[in-house]
Length: 287
Image 1: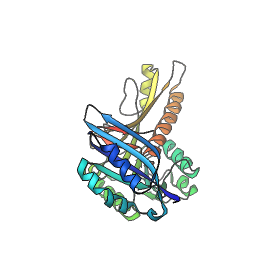
Image 2: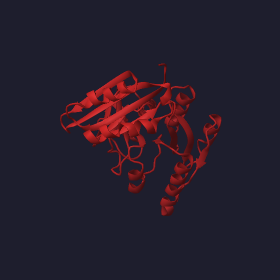
Image 3: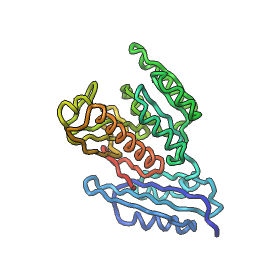
Image 4: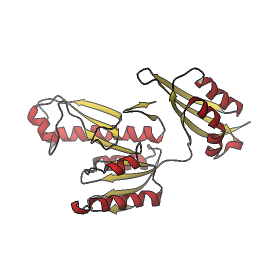
């Protein structure tokens, strides 16, 4: 029987004997063909994680709900958190940005070049700075300014837009506003943020100038899921770059922004390929 549509199955559950056997038997019984499989057992949490990439016979075309329903006895038996994803259905993404546009520009370029498996449906900003950039890529741009006394009003506008478009993932491409705990909880596991990560760390205004003043030798970036704890969410990806005394503040900024772009792009790509599974305060990333 010819195989057509491809799916991703992700599983998280208490680690126990028989999980891989039952999943494999489920796919075998439906004449599915496994293309790739990754698994990990975390001794510290006692949890098991599995990602299976497979294709199905023709009669399963666009049948995610059918797979969910038929898999339910196994899900209940092993107390699993389970997701099936059809690879033909790409995640709908909302980008949020303030004045710094390097990550925004990088994501748009990668998306338009076919390097990100998603649809960027809209850009939201509390500044109008990047409207022309959005227009050049054909992406709707929503300028939603923030008045501090009415900050929740802007979040309500963003939430309404998310619901209207049907957004799966929100990417904070250097969006320099703190989201409310309510918003973070509502979209838990669906918001990715990027920030610099210096050794040592510098917070507040002009971090690259602070790094220059202290003579740092490593600069880096961290991408993570957003929680109500500022910059403390489960980490998806990190990277560092070596610098030295010859780097000016401007050169540090350029190197740092380039690292931020790469780290954020990898994180968005892995999320959209369903390679990232939450594991409490951390993540499992099947690369």
